[in-house]
Amino acid sequence: MQAASAGAPWRQWGTDIDAQSVAQMREACALPVAVRGALMPDAHVGYGLPIGGVLATDGAVVPFAVGVDIACRVKLSVLDLPVAWLRDRAERLARALEQETRFGVGAEFKHPRTHDVMDENWGGSPVTQALRDKAWRQLGTSGSGNHFVEFGILTVEHGGFGLEPGSYLALLSHSGSRGTGAAVCDHYSKIAQRKRPGHGRLAWLPLREPEGREYWAAMELMGRYASANHACIHACITAHLGARVLWQVENHHNFAWRETHDGRDVIVHRKGATPAGRGVLGFIPGSMAAPGFLVRGRGCANSLDSAAHGAGRLMSRTQAKKTLDWKTAHRWLDARGVQLLSAGLDEAPMVYKDIHAVMAAQSDLVETLARFDPRLVKMAPPGEHPED
Image 1 (cartoon, rainbow, N blue to C red):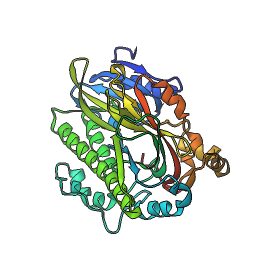
Image 2: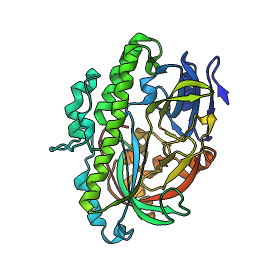
Image 3: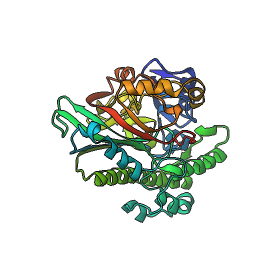
């Protein structure tokens, strides 16, 4: 366990973490409202709290410790289609992705998808009230950055969680609350910074204050909206293929939860960190050329019941564009049997940490249940501004 000077204690998993991320974690744990923290092995620099940072606070929420893409999540659907479709009917699978998803900043549908979330009360915050119609048009889209929708092979060795041992064709998606979630973060972080100057993007809003409660309600709405995005994506692709869902799992990050730790009620922020309470199922993706893993939480108290949310970046987007090339990236993809429909070079597999090393560093946090290997991947095309 580590602690910043006169700050809350925190613990780090993994050694391949840059000094700036560690410094951000120390700064967060020095906040007057900080209770405890944890840094996951996929950690890298973020705004305020690092990506992969977990922060427990006393009765306060930090908008930028939740993150810009509120309630970003992954969802896995196991389909009743033969795995051989990835070889024999790849064009049909690709067509489903191309026609039923949208990528890019501002991406939306001309004829919006339908979901009950749009019938909820969007008037509790001036942000959600103003952007409801935009959010509706973007329902079922994925944006840019590290967001993706892909088909692959889920390999189950032992079962015991709803699936028998074997290989399955599966659909995996990663995205969040789009532009509306980002606007919620921006609006309430600016309020927090005005009310508590000097703390920058770590400024907080007490939940006893109206602005804190208003942000909390907007954050929870964005959580339901992000889940609806994935529900639409999976339902539309599945219907396009005439398939049936055999089993699903979904988990989110970039969120704050009311939880009890060390015998006290706290607000746990997981910015790029997966909930991993005892018995809780979740999915941790790698990259477009690396496997992801279905996991079950072990309920580690020192990590605040958390785990990594992915492999984590090794290099910035700017560095990736300057130093990498598509020829090398496609060699990586071809060697692993991955067909890429679209993506930016800043999402090439070489920009990410070794997912196997990340998983090994958190073996005390999660148990691995199954492995997913990407085969057909779609992300935002090159040149898109990242939204993650």
